[in-house]
Amino acid sequence: MKTPKLRVPKGACDCHIHFYGSPERYPVAPTSPGAPPLAGVSAYRTLMRRWGTERVVVVQPSAYAFDNRCTMDAMAELAAELGPDAARGVVVVGDSVTDAELEAYTKAGVRGLRYFMLAGGVLPWETLPRMAARVHEFGWHIQLQFDGAEMRDHVETIKALPGTVVIDHNGKYLDPVSPSDARFKAFLDLLETGRVWNKLSGPYETSKQSFPYGDVGAMARALVRAAPERMVWASNWPHPNPFARQKNPDDIELLDVLLEWVEDDGVRDRILVDNPAELYGFPRS
Image (tube, rainbow, N blue to C red):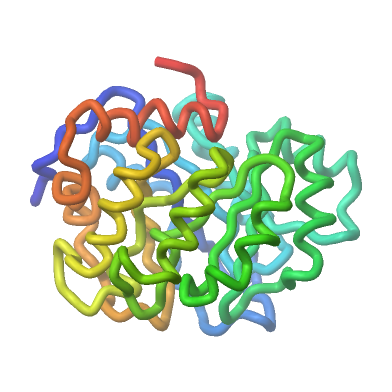
């Protein structure tokens, strides 16, 4: 079985995955653009052992809209197997959520509210400021995914949000751009606030090139240079996006791509361990 070239440090974290269960137990929302694959904890644990990672952030998939049961059940299963500090969560909730529910989510390990602004998303831009203010009171961040081509249109909105904002997948430029492009420089401008983070993840979804995804990689390297202390890595397992340019990416390559994007071993270790610990509240190793 293929093994990674990258040897991950103790406490390494995969900061963006999804779980999907049987449709009888977890029905797909009408807003979902497609039927997701079955993807459970046991399959992901096998991958963790291959990588050598010890921590994970479970992100509510758009397929389930506001129904966070599959995400929360998987987090509980991981906690039972690996301990209470092995997993954190990012969920999707709307205006109707109560403070008591937010408190319960927080105690269960949730640390973020997901805004997915592509097909299948259920929270619109106009709700972002008030929902960000609500969850900020519980120590949550906003996790945000949209087409990076629109970055300049949303810079001021993002800057005005309280607390931390995490941008998915190197900005998720559906058509990759040069680091000198004004649309990418808008992302760099956001990083200068000191409150915006990036996930080094999902290059196969948008790249026009095969591994090591040179077009997306050029952006990723620029982001690492700009703010290495606010970069985290993620696999985006089990790769559910039906619109991804490259289907079924190699999970080992998705870890090893850090060898291409991050030159310094110390920075790479920080991205895998220290930065996730700070962002998601994992114990320090």
